[in-house]
Image (cartoon, rainbow, N blue to C red; front, side, top):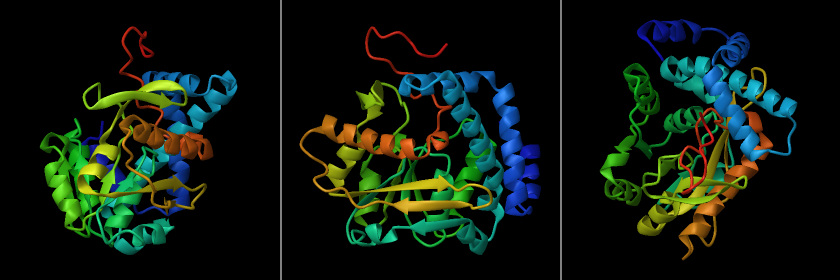
Length: 290
């Protein structure tokens, strides 16, 4: 849990050069992997469910590297919260922006899966462009305040609560604000259907298809990758999806998961494995987590 003391430490650390900050983050990740038994178990259960053909050693290796990448990103959050616009733009570069430019004249959904760099992508884009997002209040008030600050300190952003429904979100999109959407967590059975994620039935919200249909929006995936060493991050935009949404909501939702699977295979250690992605189970299926 982020405390005020932890916040002060992050402020101090954000002045460090990136190579040193990254090295500290990776070391902290090894410590967290050793001590955070509960989250380590969640990560290993997820990896075993998604990659049963991997050896135990391979899954352990990916879990360990995931904790290192996650801790590094946590320490580097201070740059997003207090660093200058110029430093953030050097830290996070943008590739494939022409795919967004090609469709930005109308409503756009940026499909943003839960890779560990997503906050870096959000803040980098917010240094230049306005947008909107659906905001889930954090249980930690310090973290909640700082995430809100980090996402809105440059160009004003509109953040909506999931409790508000999609009407204000659709209005914002029709006014020209792209929607930065993170649809790949387990929010329970409400508004979700079970579609495969690496072959495992996963409760997946149908929001991408539903909002795209209501708003007349185009879906442009955008994934942020953490680069090795002191390389920073890169936001990659992918071509806008064609024939989406279709008249089959389940097929549309499978398409979301299939896209995420492809990106996970490219950088398996960077997907958010510590999240209980399969917490909601189909009727009669045994729980996966203790």
